[in-house]
Amino acid sequence: MTLVNNEERQYWLQSMLKIASPVLQHLKERTLKKEMPLEMKEGNNRESFSHLEALSRLLVGMAPWLETTCENSEEDNLRTHFCELAREAIDSGTDPDSPDYMNFSDDFQPIVDTAFLAHAFLRAPNELWKKLDERVKNNVIAAMKATRSRKPVFSNWLLFSAIIEAFLYKAGEKDWDPMRIDYAIRQFDQWYLGDGVYSDGPEFHYDYYNSFVIHPMLIDVVETVGDQYKEWVEKKEVIFERSKRYAVIQERLISPEGTFPPVGRSIAYRFGVFQTLAHHALRKDLPSELAPEQVRSALTSVIKRTLEAPGTFTDSGWLTIGFCGHQPGIGEGYISTGSVYLCAAGFLPLGLAESEPFWHNPPMEWTAKRAWSSNEFPIDKCL
Image (cartoon, rainbow, N blue to C red):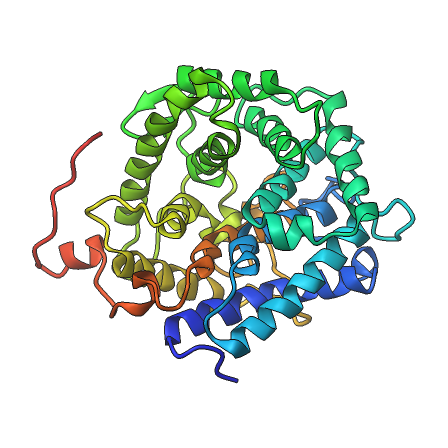
């Protein structure tokens, strides 16, 4: 079935829904814990965390598409169906009487994935939050607040606590905690190293956490609560400019063949590596040297190269652990089946209308493709 005229958008959409369907459908039926396979490193037990990971990481990428009415009626009918599925999934995962009730309070990992769920609500406040029944809203609020009993790790985890509080503010909770937000904003300003890159904690790690967490969450936290204190207002533009610079770096990492360096932790999140680049495409504030259609072409090449690798999916449609196909050996001890659904963060531009330049303009070679074809390309400049 052709849902949109743009072939690349059609490919993105079908890929996202292929990834989403098993998770959301089984949650609707309250059979996720029964049916989702649990792949993880031998000797580790991630069973109590993996289901919340799958739901929250999937929705953080799907949310902009779910939130935005589509110009194509067939696509919008599909969007409406998946909005209903997503709300049912949220109910299933947060209802204490559900067999798929998720862990929000035991151990530290739930801080992470409750934060991704909070981020999804911020990205789709109407479809994922306002349209929930009051009963479900109350369950969600209770789940969010349950994470306050433990402190986050002194790293990107500070932003998990911050974005949970930003969501509670947005939801109208009077006891939202500005100190958790202020601490994260101030600490990451201390951890800024230059040229669009933050250190993830006291020691620098060369990995993709600037994109998995740091830039997108900093932006959406200050977009949500940034006008509450003048110190936050003063930081907004700086936070935006640093993130845009990192988006430029990310685009240049995509090779002519649609590959990118397998560097650092958590590369089993696959093309979720490019959340920052995708985020600025969604926000329509890409740096001037990045044309929207150039970014679309680059990301399409990465998504195809990733998802079409043999072994990426099980026979029943679940994602496997891997970078390019099924490579369980690259999964760290904290990685399990649910973890890898953070790849969905690469789909953020589906929240743009089909008539927007990102989708409407003809394909355009990205920087590395031009550079390695002996064509002119812009020189890179530091921030």
